[in-house]
Figure 1: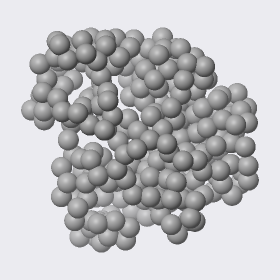
Figure 2 (figure 1 turned 90 degrees about the vertical axis):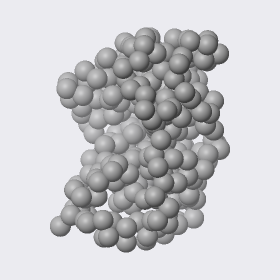
Figure 3 (figure 1 turned 30 degrees about the vertical axis):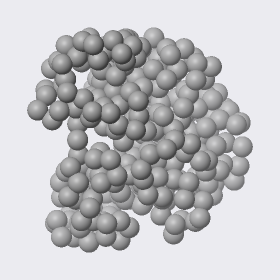
Figure 4 (figure 1 turned 60 degrees about the vertical axis):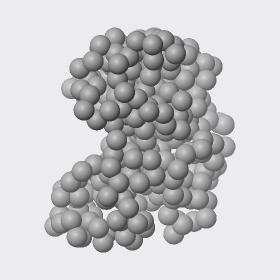
Length: 287
């Protein structure tokens, strides 16, 4: 049976301040795409009202603006992306020498951010499971001027690439509990079913890493079955794997301690932290 609002509030209260979470507004944010335009030049031409955030290329935008219908968006000078969604790429922190796997890449927000951080150098394999979602990925890669990414359409749970990439991003499909009214479709069985796919995808990406490689796992849900529990299984089945520090300063709560003290290295982001959607983020090092 799906949840009503009271049941959802009670569910959230098991690990966070539900009143704060549900009363905090989620603000629109954009990321300036420095592959297309220097940040200073962007501010010389834009008429969008913007406010700074803790990330120097991420900005709160006026809520009345139709951001996707602006010239800045059309020309690829900016991308609409939640501030929470920018964090996995920042935490993975790839450079121009890296070979990166983005295993569930559509619609391309994180792929394009990775490319920006890499200054369009190195290489990214941006993968998506079906052609319909892949079309959005192709579109954003082109609009945002991405030159170092190859798009593939394959089942990420069966990628079959071993010991090749230096870094990997697993922004897994999830129950999306951080989205408004998603709880109306949520059941414990949904989290369980989603976690089966997430675990396969996480293992596939991890096995694709070279020794010493790094992986970031993220979701936009609060369900522990899809977050800490999924990462915990990887740590148990791959003894050489270990949680790494996130090494980027932003407001958050630590992951649930019931899975072990090491989960203090993971992050749970709630809307009241910085007026953005909820997220879970973990960074894993291989070997």
